[in-house]
Amino acid sequence: MNTPVDAVRDAPSPVGTISRYRWVICALLFFATTINYVDRAVLGVLAPTLRVEFGWTEQDYGVISASFTLAYAIGFLFAGWFIDRVGTRVGYSVYLTLWSFAAAAHALAKSVIGFSIARFVLGLGESGNFPAAVKTVAEWFPKRERAFATGVFNAGSNIGAIVAPLLVPWLALTWGWRTAFVVTGLAGLVWLAFWLPVYRRPAEHPKVSPAELALINSDPPDPPVRASWLQLLRFRQTWAFTVGKFLSDSVWWFYLFWFPMFLADRFGVDLRTIGLPMVTVFLLADVGSVGGGWFSSRLMQRGWSANAARKTTMLICALCILPVVFAPHVEGQWVAVWLIGLAAAAHQGFSANLFTLTSDMFPRAVVASVVGIGGFAGAMGGFFMNLGAGWLRGYTGSYAAMFFMAGGAYLAALLAIHVLAPRLEPARLDLAPRVSS
Image (cartoon, rainbow, N blue to C red; front, side, top):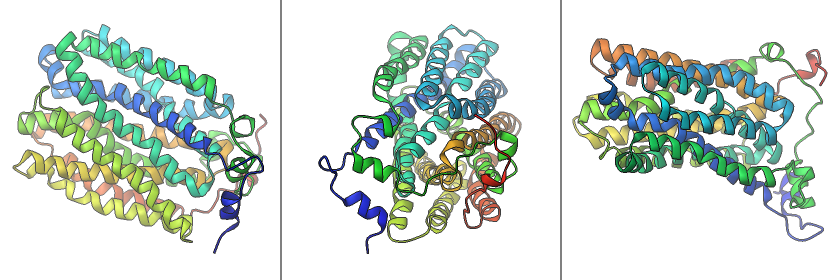
């Protein structure tokens, strides 16, 4: 039985077949996210080499990595507020320009302090990517398509993590590690040459047909409200997303920055052999990102509520992550790689649905702000995880404690989300005092 949304989607456009320009916008988000993750992953790929060249300890590397996540956390708060006010076209451009130059500036670093400063500025710049991307999805897609669209652009994070171990070792071995930072950093400026001419809001875009615009706007209209951070923090829905991000993102930061070090310490992997294991893990993560978003969207198309579809998908993902606790104890390198790859895939499926909860529970006008608050919490989780990983590795000589926490974090996150938002009910911002534009 067709729903009203199906009828809008399937109806012929007055000017021809329905356009699909929203997927062009999604492709741009995908490439921006790919660049975002290449730039942040370069240091992780080069870490075993730089550790030898500069004599870093585990604690030194933990401080450098934590500098990024601390700035990322701080930047997330302001990024959401800034993008909600200036819009995604301008906001995305500002943040991508900042992180591109900061990534290239790593080539100038010569000490732990120098790398920490470069990572801090990079974190501030990269904090704008996800608030801008999630807000763009909320503006360009109806609710039934948002989890899949989020999964598609979020897959760029895994493609970036795949590109980095393929490209960076070649650049570093051919022209030196400083060249790797410069080339990957400035690549983001190419994306701007496409984004600025192409992006407009759906109602203003000449390539969006009336039928596609009707599909995009097929959900009930959002209430005309705005809310400050303090007002948003009054809602259980905000805390559901925030706690979920804190618990799950801390694990992802651990994989991103410590996976190459884990392979080097546990299995003797070096710059020449790191590529295939990292590609395997993040290729699996790509499948999980798209698959997790597709699965919950498919359940909704079959008549499931957003609450049931999102949480069922997230539960499956959380259960798939549990075996990662065995990764530091297995003898074969590739057994560990596949365990971590499965966990990374499930993380991304979980994350695609977690991001979508914001547009399920909040009007589009404040989505970026809510994502910013949750992103702050997630990055702070990464900050503590990076510092803790450096300390635990140095103190215990093992990665076991980190992988144990990684295994259970997602079930805890889902439990917290369900307690705080048992039905994913929309936040009643109309009951909060309104803030003028």
